Image 1 (cartoon, rainbow, N blue to C red):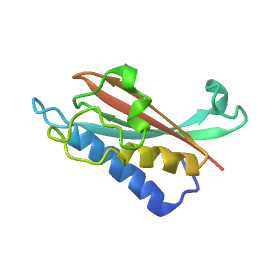
Image 2: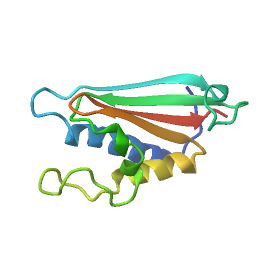
Image 3: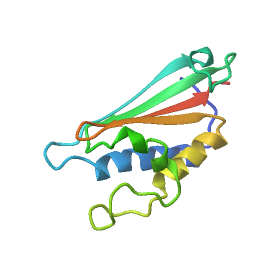
Image 4: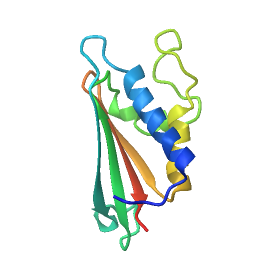
Length: 127
């Protein structure tokens, strides 16, 4: 996909998503992170403009995952699913990612499963 972006913000987006995958990798297996992109029609999702083509960017890992009940909470500022003694961080990384996506008129969602990993899906409009 070719999309118009604010370079600094998109670099920050990938740093935060990939850094998150590494931080929450499983101690039982080497981290595996898969990044991919594909064109996606807005008509496939009721939250999107049906006349717009989006670039769907996936960042998928095999880390510790999370309970799907927390899928929206992890994007809130200062929200952490684990204590500071378990994993370092401020709890703002994914909130920044969501804001960057919104600044580009896009959407983000996440799927996770405990002990299986997570997949972040970023949808940015192609212009």
